[in-house]
Length: 359
Figure 1 (cartoon, rainbow, N blue to C red):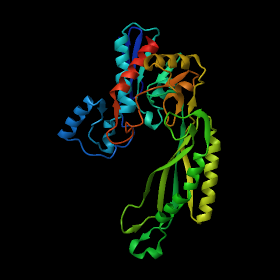
Figure 2: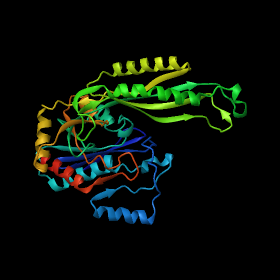
Figure 3: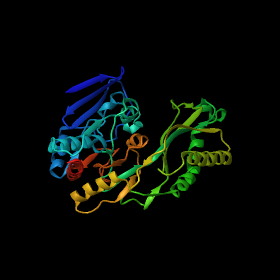
Figure 4: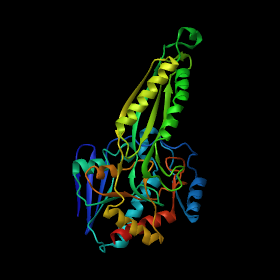
């Protein structure tokens, strides 16, 4: 039986009953901001042939033509999205009705921009019921018991607009922003000294999760012959799962105010998004059960750690539901980059771990 609910004018919520397994999907009928397209070559007949050949080498590549911003649903998202759906459906197909649990598979959009209208919608508004959960959005060489949170925001540097030919009558904020970013490198290093009590993923440069901040977007000016009145940058500050967000915010604000004063400029710092991250205790019975399933597939235990990125497990965790993360996002799969792909062996391992867990 298939039931489709029109939750509002933007969303269809569909549930397919497969006996002991149910598959739930959200479909959006609105333009939702996603990741920008990676910079790379446009798809050609040769690139498609290369993509097909790459499957023989054990890679499932993401050759999807770069789309313009207003067609952003064409984003590939192979490692973090499509591989998860393929492996999950593959596991359910192998198991049929031979499962130990009532299984709900939920596929949703929106994770890259916070997940509030994806899994967040299903957990907070639809109120899906479950005893435990696996977020299929992580690395294949560890059992994920948590994920870092993040803060985003903007720094604005103010100047005086004017004619570029008479620049002595204007006050250009762009060089000032450049100097401020150099000054803020000190805070980047300060963040990197903040360590969590939770292990970082295997092959990380540090054993424990560590603080990070990246300046990822920059802008200012619209026309070559006009000195702008404003220059700006946006940042992504990663929070540790066991870190107090207010403390991190205060540390950044304090460093920014002192840097601004040293440079003698008119600038402002604002925050516009906060996600504290989450962690599931490694001693939780469900974490142990998942670890045993992974051990059965690999022949040895996988490390238990938390992700340096974020994932939708936070929406289960905030309701007290034990959750782990596991997926096919290997370090070399160019996730969030050009030609994102997954290793077919990781895809098979992911499917097999899910089969062991619920079979």
